[in-house]
Image (cartoon, rainbow, N blue to C red; front, side):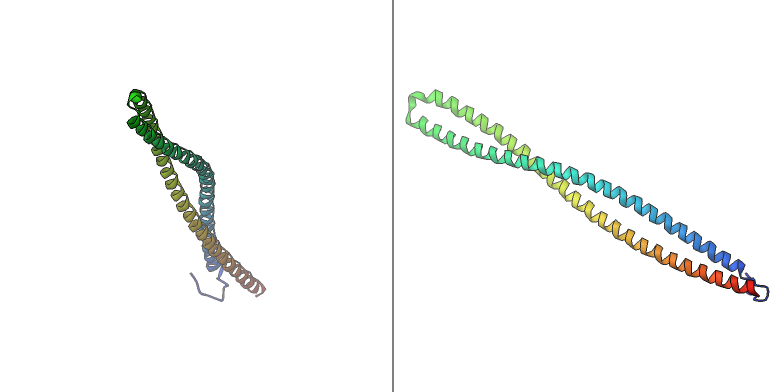
Length: 178
């Protein structure tokens, strides 16, 4: 590079600065585009997860209601079992019939208990999905923040580029006048 002022030899330096500014601008534009794509992907994923969570929450509420109903039914059947047992002690003649009804109630109680545990397992899975959703929301917020900072950096570099461009035109105008 020449530092000579007599022959107006600043063109090489200006070209290098322009070239660097253009390269930096392209680099930042590529990074911003990549971040926009990533954010867009995360937003779509968040929307999909939000829809899934709504669906799972509805299922969860339905299953909670079913679990409550089953729990009430279990209590009722337990009381019924206790009543049958008391009747059995009071009336020895109807022993066989009561045993049969008690066995049926116990079998039904066992089935309800199994349904209750299956619903509980599904509920725990829903809680896990909700936790993952919150994690994705936090990650999305982080990416949005990074995008904001990159946009600010890009804006700053664009302003510097325009200032440098103005200096270049000013210097070129002075050189052209001499």
